[in-house]
Image (cartoon, rainbow, N blue to C red):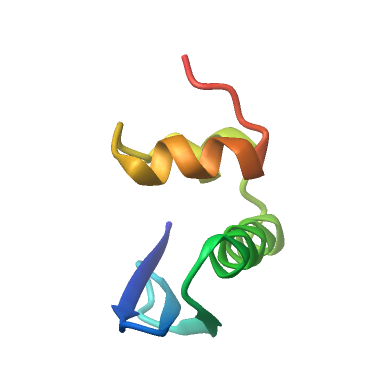
Amino acid sequence: MIVLGADAHKRSHTIAAVDAATGQVLGEKTVAVGARGFAALVVWAHGLGERAGLGAAARCRGRSSGSWSRAASGFCGCRRS
């Protein structure tokens, strides 16, 4: 499982991806706040999942019903059941 942690600021967000089993940092990305930055983070996170051999359902099923789910559903193409 890949865990994402966020360091959110007024003008930028930095996300770090960590392998939950080993604690190894898999990568990090900093983007400007806004729709474009959020879209870039979603694409980046999906790329991590693909490199780790996770399918689309495994990458997206952990989302809550909060704003992440509503916003990310337009970018990831996953279907919510």
